[in-house]
Image (cartoon, rainbow, N blue to C red; front, top):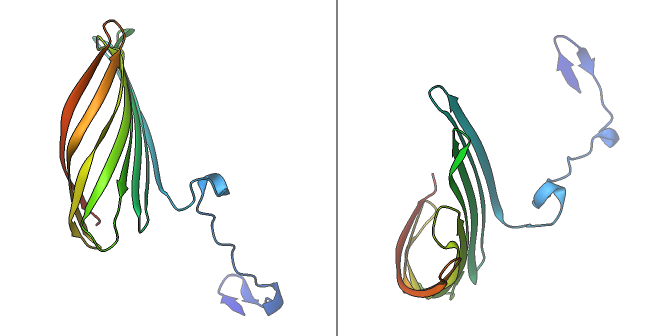
Length: 176
């Protein structure tokens, strides 16, 4: 029974009341990417005056953590134009996979990546980083993760070359 000052008394039979179907956690109501945290953002800016400038960017992030794995995928695109000339055109994508060991703070990680940058002499760069990570803090509010390792990258376009590099990172996440 509902009572409303505008509609008066409304009686609905109990048999006609059904619980709402729970939302499907996948993309567009499917099971695709079920269990992943998903974020998509995009933006366009522009100005017109002495020059005409346009910027376009897009960002996709996917995250998932289980007892044995922590996975994070990021893809970003940025395009900038000024007076009809492209001044920046970049695409980056990286997948970070931490292979978690229950009851331990240390874990191995692997992170393949690809980068396109039209303004660099190489245009295309791909590779993989890997090494050992350590979970310093893990709570409902804070995560502090360190990673140390090595990586290799291959650049293409013009003179192709292979580069070895070191990896050192400190990641702080605050869940407000």
